[in-house]
Image (cartoon, rainbow, N blue to C red; front, side):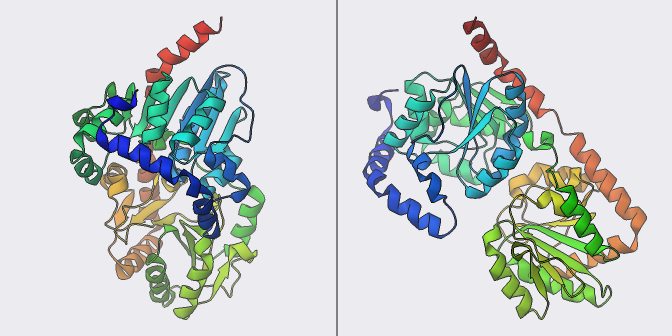
Length: 431
């Protein structure tokens, strides 16, 4: 793809990111101070690899954050089982920590380079991927331009396009036509996503389903689980998972209401961003409640009202502690968090009204009776109290949630089927 073939917006973007390249070090240092970068691996963000490229065919998969990279795990596993070299890139430190625990043998992780012309050239020069799979809505202009110049097949997997993003791209029709049209395959989560990508100019669009339904449940350290079960034995437990700013105060107030009827209640708050642990503990104290922070190696003893689970990669542990989970980012207007993992691990789901990021998932759970919408702290307390008071109904909700998720699996098989021609080509070329 030559520069002259690009629309003015993309030529301007490439020029601006080239000018910004000298300031990358300062940007990374600033983000590191906020806990968003790993300075020990900062060179990777500049396209300088910290690992050698393995010999043979290499498939590159990219997901921005935890959710996207976890959704790729079943594909990564299938590719490794075919004895292919797999490179996985992500942006966030949290995703890197999770992948360090969950990547199968044979897969490598690197931080994705910042999307500048120089950094992308370095990245491609070293890794020379034979196939690139981007997750969900990752449309990096410089990465796409560099891949097309080198004639590397591109696929957008688990692709989604929100109504808001669609409206933004419609204002830049030529730009999105070039970006979306650069992908050889676009494997959409839903037919709505597929129609939106077709409208924007994508090729090879197929509705493959949501990979997140096929992701294995997150693991849990069995010794830690047994310890926590011992400390919480006999106590009703409410887990507020992946919460965001503004929700912890609501959850604390919910605890205060519930404690009048359940004096031994333990509430666990597992924030989406663990670095907010101290801030959340202060919010709990301000509500007149007693917190304990897992990052400080404290346990939820009998004096603890709210346990702040401010660690990385332990949600699987807490999902296994209780059959009632409130999914955060849904009482604040940010779109919700993925409820599939707790549903797979035997939990009924409570959620607020703001779940547009996972609309089809929540609709399936709600319609099956495995989830229930609440609107504030009062309705959250009421729902929890009703579920605790009716164990039979709670068991039915748990069973319905698990079955609703199971019915929606199969995206991995469809995705692998779509990319199989490329893998066959690689296998024939190696002979």
